[in-house]
Length: 289
Image 1 (cartoon, rainbow, N blue to C red):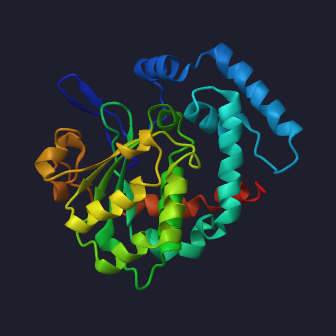
Image 2: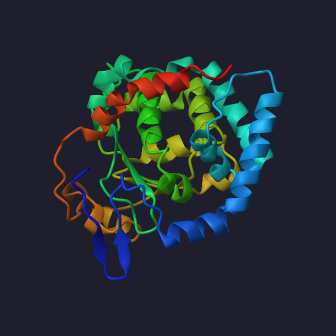
C-alpha cells in the first residue's frame, strides 16, 4: 500500500488509502456535511473535554486526535459525541472478547478475511473488504471474527481523510457456509453485531455492497435489519452481479478477482500493520469502564 499511486479516470481521482493529506474537497465535506470549522473544532473539543472531566463513570482518552473521531462522526455535536464515547466504552465492557491485543488473534488477522483496497473511492472513502471464504468457523469463533474485523477497520480511523469521508464496503459472500449462517443467526451474535455497527464504532460507515450472495445472505440481513435504526437499514445493498458493483466502485481500483484492473499481490500488509500497531492498541484498551 505504500507504493500505491494516485489513479485518475476522467475527472475522478482515486487516492492511496494511507495518504493523510486533506484536499479542498475533503475540507468542503468537513465544513458542509460535518459543520467543521476552526472555530467549531476549538469550541467543541473544549466542551467535550469538560464533559469528560466532569463525569466519573469511566476513564476516557482525551487527546485531540482521538476525540476528533467522535466529533466528526457526530457532526460536531459535543453532547452526541460524549454519548457515543460512553456507549463505545460501555460496549467494550460488555464485549471484552472483541477488544483484544492483535497478537492474540494473529492467525485470524493473517487469514486476511478483512482487508482494505490500496485506494479510496472517488469520494475519498476507504474501501473495506470482507472475504467470507477465508473464514473457517471451525477454527475461528464468531467473537474472534468480529474482533479481527474491528481491529482492521480501526486501523485507518486515525487518518483524518477516513474520519471525514468514511468507509464503504465490498463484502464478498462467495463460500458463505451454513455454519457461518448459523453463527450470524445466533441471537446473541446478531445483537452484538447490530450494536457494534450502530453508534458504538466512531467511523462514518456509508454503505456496503454485498457480492456473490447466496439466498441465505438475504436472510442474514433481514434478521439484522430488524435490530437496526432506519438510517442504517439502507446502508447494506445486495448486488446481483459484479457488473452492478462497477456502477458504484470503479474497476480501476478493484482487484482482478472482482473484474477490476489492479494486480494486487497477496501481501497481508494490513494484517502486518495491525500487528505492528499492538502497543497503540493496548494503550487504547487501558481506557474505559
